[in-house]
Amino acid sequence: MISHDYSHRRTGGGMSEHDFGETYTFLELFLRTYVVHEEEVKIVLQAILDTYLLEYNRSDPIRALKALRNPRNAGRKSQTSEEDISRIMDLRRNHYSIRSIAEETGVPRSTVQRLLKEHAVP
Image (cartoon, rainbow, N blue to C red; front, side):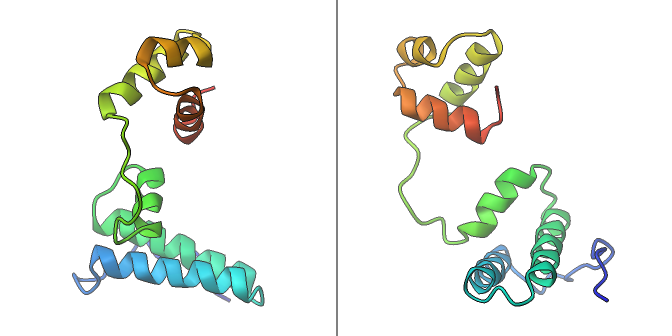
């Protein structure tokens, strides 16, 4: 039986953030390709995420997961600033509609919807 608690282990500086990301990505691909031991792979993926959070003192699992899934920071960079995102979240908390938030901030509606979904604001 595989233990679910890996939090007591430390890597001792042996794995870089990049190594964590590469390992996580490889296992995700393995899981999508060969669904033989799905539960075991999911346990290992969670253990990698937990160890990464512990090792690099990360407090936000969602951001850590994004970093693990994209260790090389590839892809198009966001055009939306952290200030704009914060403003969008505040407006939504004040019950503004997605359309009015888009008009107020100048951010496209689809981007507002995506950001609200990513940051889990109803």
